[in-house]
Image (cartoon, rainbow, N blue to C red):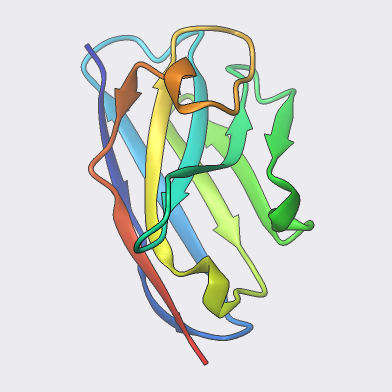
Length: 124
């Protein structure tokens, strides 16, 4: 079993930046691909970014447009999402997810463990 706890969300103005963190605990982090998803009010949860265990491969949603960067520190069992040039459309609850596989996935069904989410609000 893997427990995931997100942090770093908050209120930011348009064009600002936030760094989300996701701390994993419960069992070995080894070999897990990690992902970030988000869900805006009234919308379905959508894929944002993912990173493999080694950190060597990443994948991003098109709307990221080079603004977000996913990374991980396996020594700390933590994955990060650096978000720059934030837009009001980025307002959502952001969820961390873990996938017991070395392969990337952009679908919710590909992830076995989920955090509770952290709210990101971008004001215009």
